[in-house]
Image (tube, rainbow, N blue to C red):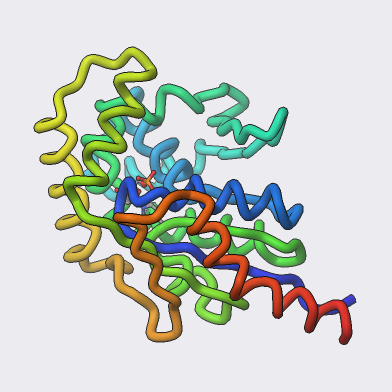
Length: 229
Ligand code: DC
């Protein structure tokens, strides 16, 4: 069997990484892995169990008790933390406010990266996150780096949360995104940076269909190559 295809999608928060990743996975019949959801699941566990982030022993032993799984049903991805469906709860503000701090902890990253590398070992996958093309899969078949204007990103996220019935303000969302951008790009452990060989996709002013077409224009030749090998 020829080597599996790994497509890495990195970029800022609320850039639509997961939307395009899901659409590509569906079209190509690849497995989609949302690594942000994994860091969110860890954050939820830490919040619920009041884990002191400055206590390395407490963090390590909590990590030993965290088991994250994905399930794919009716074209949707569900995230499970120790068998409990936490797909909704990890998108709410308490987790969003803490997740950058949790994902900056070295022990957390080591544990998650190990799991992610295992997930992408033998299957065709699309994985989105912040360090996929730089740390998790530096040899990914293809890498995209997504970006968009911060105001547009905040408005998209705001609409999403309001539609779900959450009571949030646009200012609060904008501030959370700005803070996460700052924390994600300046942290010591695996900061968000564009891999040298990544293809930049700025979706400030293009719709989902155009984004999909843009990405597919790079992916199609790979599939032809694989099929003719
Ligand atoms: O993509 P997201 O907004 O769900 O990610 C949540 C947080 O997790 C984000 O603030 C940064 C962090 N993250 C990370 O550090 N590395 C990844 N591979 C994915 C997410």
